[in-house]
Length: 171
Image (tube, rainbow, N blue to C red; front, side, top):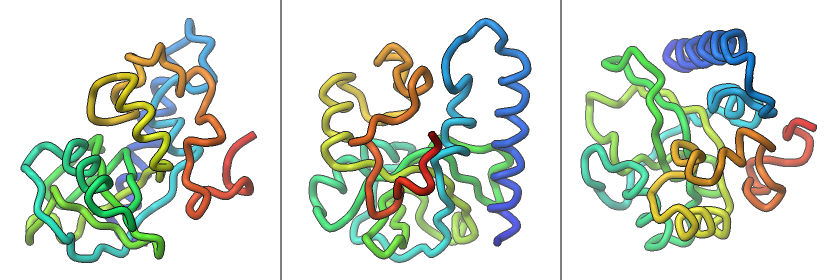
């Protein structure tokens, strides 16, 4: 495992533990996006060249548009980190069916050792949430869906079956 991936996972666990400790009033199944993603997510370590260059600081939009333009790619979200970034950043990227990540936003030498940890969504779920919230991004906009994902976890049709088998989805 890369040092950035180890660092990313340590940060996410530390944040999730702190939020779990401080958030005593919530009866949600997941008190934080960090805990939700730690339970369902997986690392993405093999990066391949993106077929297109997205706009800077528009990862959610870039990846939704990429999903529509390249039907052989899958939409993935949540946390990434690079050598230059000392926090776990909410981020979106694409993955092919071999699990190789394609990041149309973090391109160049500055991001070559980035680490990614997240969940891969089905195309139908991505479109459903985009239509419901009228926003790019799923997890950061869960509040617009009455925190359904933190309250209940992911619905069965949300997670891409190639990347999230029933074996690694928490009960």
